[in-house]
Length: 253
Length: 342
Image (cartoon, rainbow over all chains, first blue to last red):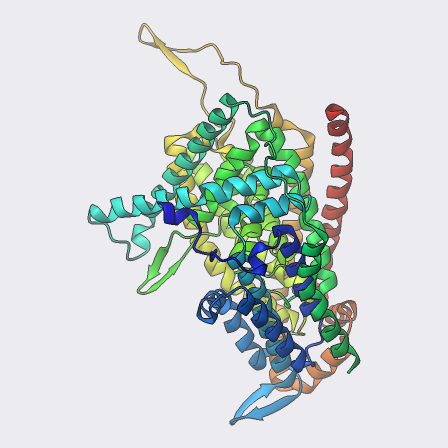
């Protein structure tokens, strides 16, 4: 159980990216992605430089490249979509290895692949260097509505509990000889989903009662309210500030 | 499927982000009214449930499987406000933690997958429940229809955003055909699973299903072999009768109608367009070279296919009304709350 709580996404470490305050990192990543998205797609070299920047951050945080690449797999559905573009987009045609491809489609595919991959890589680095709870605290520091932050923190806190409950139900089904192999078994699975909803809702009610009995009145006490020093903000700003001139150069060159 | 960075251009992403923030704000207000101070733990747990149930694999045929998207299910089980809130929180966490969906596309994702699915499915569900006889079977039928429509509606909303702010000019008709075609299939799966799940919950704990409120039969007592009405318990589901909800579902129904009329109306012009593209690609090239700004593109489309243009205009109009209406709503609702907290 202990392993489940330090989430698999987080990779423990004591580097500069790990030590930065979460809200600084959130702002930095968002600014970086914004800069990347607003770069013209014709400036291919700019995206190589952005990738180099992210690689530098990964090296600084000692995140192995294999881990980073494995997490990038999350964007595979959209890679498939992007690969279709050269075939469906009308426009100037070009021939590559005997296949008719459209030039605007190729540009579109490149645009989505480059920007999407960089965005995913930046988010992966953020999640790998920041603990879940710290991220929630960061969102709170960024003045997200407190209720939203509370809901998010409950979701994170009980996400593993509910997922484990689902896994236990799956084990129980399989130990009784059930094997889902087709549409005929959807009824059983849906009943499990229904039972899972009832359990989650009832757990929510119990959690609420437990909180009320400990003096909860609608807002959570803030016990570790951390504020970032100017140096922390400066370190966090390095990434977007390094990306910005690349973007500007991309527009002017 | 989550939209990554770089798919929709910056102005439309920002606009979608503003719309999503407004919807979440309305959701926060509404959820607090539905759940009082129980909001945080209950909505959090329901969000965790949606997150988990998206990982539950439903085998389709040999090797392939699908999973639930959960927007319609959330709307029916916990109500539209809490539903929007829960799905939005799930999307937010997926974007930040799992890099699933771009950070700059978060607004697009929340608008398309959270707000549109929840609002469309709940409006349809509510309407059907009102019309159909008050039985458990019509409840499950209504949830089937709601979930079935919600998925292609979400795909149509994505196509609309793509038509306005897509970074590559794929012809709107093609995107719409492909997106809606695929998502109708996904919607059938979603509908079956949602129906079965709602049915399972209603069978065990009908009191927990938000959409089934007011459908419970009055309690009867058997006194001396005769059924006698028991004294009604003190319960008043007054919230369900508020005019605001009616207004909201009316807007949603309008959006649904505009989106769907356009979808059906566009089916035949799309076919014509395809033929035209097959016979003379040059024509299309000129159109798309001219279509530099989205509105110009839209205007060109309008000349080519007036019905498609009309449908899209309808959606844009209703969308603008929803955004403005939601903003006014929020401004109006904010004041009493602020006074109460003072």
